[in-house]
Structures are given as C-alpha cells and as structure tokens.
View: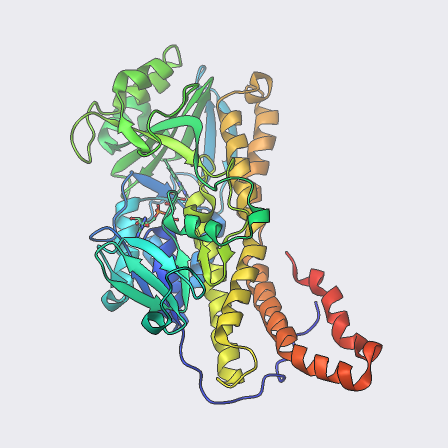
Amino acid sequence: MPSIPQSRFPSGPSPIPLHVAIIGGGITGINLALGLERRGISYTVYERSPGFREIGAGIGFSPNAEEAMKLLNPDIFHAYKRTANPNGEDKFQWINGLTDERLYSLSVPKDGFLGCKRSEILEEWGRLVPPQNIQFNKTIESVQEPGDQGYNPSEASGKILLRFTDGTHASVDLVIGCDGIRSRLRQHVQSHLESSSIQHVAKESYTHKYCYRALIPMSRAIEAVGQHRALTRFMYNGPGAHIITYPIGNNSVLNMLAVISDSNEWPDEQRHVLPGNKDDIRQAFKGWHPTVQKLADLFPEENEEGGGPIVKWGIFDTLDFPLPQYYSGRVAVAGDAAHATGPHLGAGGGLGIEDALILAELLEKVTEIQASNGSESELGTDIMLERALYEYNDFRYARTQDVVSWTRKAVDLFQWKDENVAKDGKKFGRLVKKLFHQVWYDLDLHQMVDWSRGRLEFDVLERALEPIEREARETLGGDSLSSLSDMDSEEGDYRV
Ligand SMILES: Cc1cc2nc3c(=O)[nH]c(=O)nc-3n(C[C@H](O)[C@H](O)[C@H](O)COP(=O)(O)OP(=O)(O)OC[C@H]3O[C@@H](n4cnc5c(N)ncnc54)[C@H](O)[C@@H]3O)c2cc1C
C-alpha cells in the first residue's frame, strides 16, 4: 500500500467543528453516537421513541461485532460484557429436530457469541450517551439539502435542514440515518440518486418466514429439556421450521426464537408484527421429536410485552430491493436502514456496529485533516464529508449485501430445503461453518479502518492537488505530470 503523505496539508486556523445528526437510537445509532463521543466529534441523536427502547427478547453478538465494539469505544464492549450471559459451552450446536441427534457443533471463540437481553444492553449503552446529546420524541419528517426544492439558505446557512413532525427543525453538517428497516432516510437517499442508478424503489420485503419470540424462566426450560440443552446455544432444525435457544439474564431466562416458513404473502406491509397464536407453533413442529415439542409448548399463549395474543413477527429484508448505494451528498444510511437482514446468522446488529465503526473513523479522519489543513483550505469540509461517505459506501456495500444474501441461504439450510445436505452432518457442518465464518472472520476490521482512513486522506489530497496540477499542466504542458496521475492507478491497493 502506498504511504500516505502527511505533510502536504499546511497547518492553518482551526476550522468550525462539524455537527452530525444521528437519526434513530437503536443498536446502530447508539454505537455510532458512542464512537463519535470517543473521538470528540459533536453529534445529536434524534429518536422518535420517548427513551432508548428495544423489544423482542435476546440478541447475540458475533466475534467480529465484539471486535468492532472494542475499536469503536471500549466502554461499549465493557457494557456489553456486563449484560452478556456466559456460554455453557463455547459452542453453537445443531440438532436434527426429528430425531434429536446432534448434526453439528461449531466452536465459538472463548466466551464469544454471547447472548444478552436487548432491553438490558440498550439501557447500558444508552446510559453512556450524555443526555444533552439525545433528543427523544423526535420523528424525522424531512431532510433538505442545499439545492433541494424548498431549501431556505437563510434558515440553514448552507447546512442540511432536518424537519421533525413536532414542527421543530435543526441544521447539521452530516446526517446518518440509523432509522431501521422502514427507514425514512433510505427514501431520502434514493430520491437524491441519479435516475440511471435506480431500478426499483428500495424497500424491505417479506422473506416468507415469520417468527415467534419468548423469554422462558430458566427453571421451566430446564424442566422441559434439561440443564445441558438449556444453558448452551442450540438450534433444532427440520422441514420448514427451526427453533433457536440460548440463555440470557445470567442464566435466569431461556431466549427462544421459532422461525416458520410461510408460502403466503405477509397480510399487512405497514405492520411487521401481527397477532399470532400458539397453535400455529404447535402445528409447525407437529411430529417432531418430543424435545422440540416440549420447547414449542413453552411458548406462551399471551404476548408478554403488551398483553393480548402472542405476536408473530414477519421477517423482512432488503435483498430483493436494495438501495444501489448507501449515501447521497452528505446523507447516509447505516444498519438496518441500509441493509436489513433476517436473524438467521445473528448478524444484523453486528453489521450496524461495523458500519458505525467505519463511519466514526472516517469522520475522525475528516476532523484530523480539518485540523491540519485549517479553515482556509481549497477543500471545504462539505466535500470532505461527501468523500468520507463515498468511502463508507465503498467499504461497506459488498460486505453487507453479501451477509443479507448468506442469511437467506442459511435459513434454507436450517429448514431443510435440500434434505440430503441437511441430514448429513458432514455436509451440513461444512456449509454452516462457512456461512458463520464468512460473517465472523472474512472482514479484517483493523484493515478496514486503516485502509478507509488512508483512502480518504489520499482522496482529499488528490482533490486538494487538483488546482495545483491544473496550473502546472497549463504552465508545463500535458504529460510531465505523470507522477500525480499515477496515483490513480494505485487506488485498487486500498480496497479490502
Ligand atoms: C428475531 C430477530 C433476531 C435477531 N437476532 C440478532 C442477533 O442475534 N444478532 C444480531 O446481530 N442481530 C440480530 N437481529 C438483527 C438486529 O436486531 C437488527 O439488525 C438491529 O436491531 C438493527 O438495529 P438498527 O439500530 O439498525 O435499527 P433499529 O433497531 O430498528 O433502530 C432504529 C431506531 O430508529 C428509530 N426511528 C425509526 N424511524 C424514525 C424516525 N422517522 N425518526 C426518528 N427515529 C426513528 C426507531 O424508533 C429505532 O429506535 C435479529 C433480528 C430479528 C428480527
């Protein structure tokens, strides 16, 4: 990799600090906030709920997500460790749901891929965000950039104008939409892309799988399936359905997720959560081994979070209608807003944390360049921010789209689309290992950080040199500047 010249940026007066808006305070938004906090970058989180809130039982974070937490802000990692449940065994094990035989056992790193209660981890992380940096009950209504219809320069003085449904507004330098699978910011990004790059409206679509989630007191779970099965991560596979179980809450609760295939369309695109019923679960696992039927029986009749019948969650993703890129101008999307994925590889939350890491690092790089370059530079902060989002997209797009598609492959495997493979422990294991290892180990986060920062600096340097190059070309004539142009051809070296 070519070394990045540091000394080309002349020092100058301190630039005006940039201010970032993070829309949405879910896993991605909070992690980004804490990453910026660590790097001394000014930000506000705008969250539509009255507080940080996560519904839906447990979540597990993969080894790469843990690494991303450490790099983003070690406090994120320590908070996660405080709420994470110890592994019974450092293994993830797959059981043939019809026979109760073990199909495959995947080693996880020591004390890795731990489960935790969503509400607890969000609360822990939320506590780390200074209250003055969060505004709750703020639902974004529209985003206007300079040049947009209705943009009023005197209201926003060249910045991006955010309007909220409560009639208030804010102006910021950069917007990161972490507003989840039904993202408003995704629409904004798409509406600002060149029409030639748009083949469809980017949106989430039903994957023909839905799920039921439950938290079962550990004593009941142990009574049903025994201590060994209740205290370690297991998945029970079979035709058209699977159940995953792992302990959370310091072994006080068994987190259960039953995923069921569905040939119908999802009845209500506006609502991903609908009333379900327990017979639906019993029916899906009818005829399976008694262990699985006992697990199915543990699901409650009633919705534990809001009363009424137990709810079923449609599993949607963005595989069929993806955004062609994750940013336009100085507005980007991250986490589920950019690339919503099913839960089957336990990767969606981790991808959002990886996104947060690279965004925080690139924005830190912008501030470093600003500091050494001064406010009188040829290159304004706005352009540097756009270049940062360009690099973010370049480093994240292929990886995240791949994970969305691997997740679809994983659920086909777990639900025996090809029975010959699914029942053969060796073949099944080979594929399972490959799928998880691709998510966990195929991305070198340290390299992603180093290369993206280096590329941004290189881009900025190139842009800063453009006028000098132009002037020199005019003075000296065409080809004598080959050394500058040669830098272009080395760009590929920075890519992951
Ligand atoms: C059943 C299931 C199990 C899963 N298990 C795992 C797992 O084990 N491991 C894993 O890594 N991933 C898992 N995932 C995926 C993971 O839950 C998601 O990828 C992750 O929660 C996405 O986080 P996010 O912050 O990007 O989006 P969200 O969590 O959806 O957060 C978006 C936030 O934005 C706010 N918001 C939305 N619109 C607006 C607006 N207009 N204005 C202001 N605020 C707004 C919302 O209130 C919300 O707080 C699972 C998913 C499911 C469905």
